Length: 149
Ligand code: ZN
Image (cartoon, rainbow, N blue to C red; front, side, top):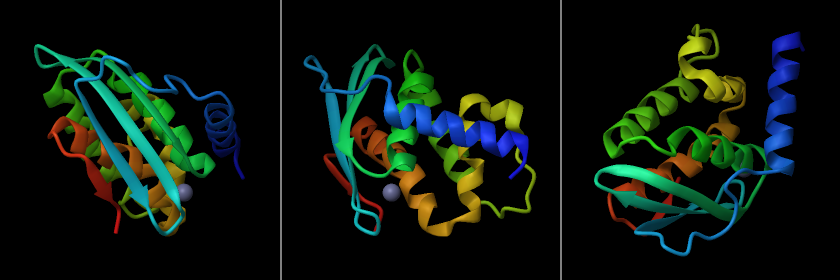
């Protein structure tokens, strides 16, 4: 493992241990549940959207370190973004984690999300990392349930 991968793994473990924005959001305007049957990950994403801006976002759930860390990092990058920006970030994140491991990732452009580029080496983990984002998109679209299968 090179130094960068070790650093990324550390960030994922830290977010898993001390997730940001974890717990219910009482004045949520939208919410959705995500389920990844392959791994057993469950995540519920709460949003407070006002005037097209995601003013607050929180999540609850249980799952593996990757899904929990992904949800935690996601809440920190989505908070304060417009609904459109949030959807664009989902698209580019999804594209990044499903790209070939040989493909270069613009790590700077992805910022904190770049730590998940490593899941490309593990196809079964791609769904773990993508799950909270699917739940986010579903919540933005006013949906309730979403499954990776
Ligand atoms: Zn998982």
